[in-house]
Length: 303
Image (tube, rainbow, N blue to C red):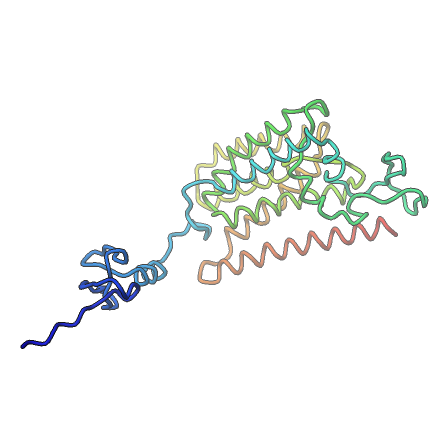
C-alpha cells in the first residue's frame, strides 16, 4: 500500500489547499494570493518588496511625478470654503485677516496701534499673539461688496492659481509645491508686518506671486523658451506696480521674493542622494529667517 501524499496549503491561508509556488520565495500560494509575474506567479509580500526596490521616477527638481495637481485642487477648495465661511459669518475676516498691529476697544471698534496704549484697549494682530494671521490671511478674500474688486478678488486669484499652480506642481511634486506655496504666503505676510503693520490685508496673491517667481526660475533652469515666460513675468511685475495703489503691494513683493528664494534652492542645490535634505534645509532656513524678522518687528512695536 503506497503512503498517502502530503497536502500542501497556502502560507497565508493554511486551510486552503495549494499546489502553486511563488517564483521568488518558493512558498505555496492560493489563487487569492497569486499575483501574475513575467513568468509564473508571485505572492503578495514579494510583489510589495519588489515595488519598494524599483527606483521611482523624479522630476528635474527632485519631486515625485504626479498625474493630477491634487495640491492645487485642495488649495482652491480651501480658499473657496473660507470665502463661503466669510459670507455666512463676516466676522471671520475681522478675526483672521493679516494684521500686524492694532488696538481693539471695549465697544468692538478698531484703532491704530500705539505703544504704550490705554488700559481699556487691547492689542490685536500679530503683536497681540495672533500669529496664525500670518497664514490665515492668505486664505481669505474681500467680501463681494467691499474693496476695489469685490468678488473679482477671489475669482482672479483662483483662476491664476489654477493656471500656474498646475504647471509648478507638476514640476516640483506635491510636497515641494506645498512648501513653496506656504512659504510664499508667509513671506508676503511678513513683509506686510515689516512695512505696513497697521494695514489689514487678505488674499492669496502673495502665494501666487511666489508661484510666478517659481515658474520663472524653473523655466530658466530647464532652458525653456523664455519669450512666453518673460511676457508672463512682465505682466506680473506690471500688476505689482499697479497694485501699489490698489492692494497690498507689500504682500505681493514678499511672496515674490520668498517664492524665488525657495525655487532657487530647489533648482540649484547639488544633485545626489542628499538633494532632498539640502532643499528641506533651505526651506527651514527661510522659515527661521521669517520667524526672526517677525519676532524682531513685534519686539520693536512693543518697545
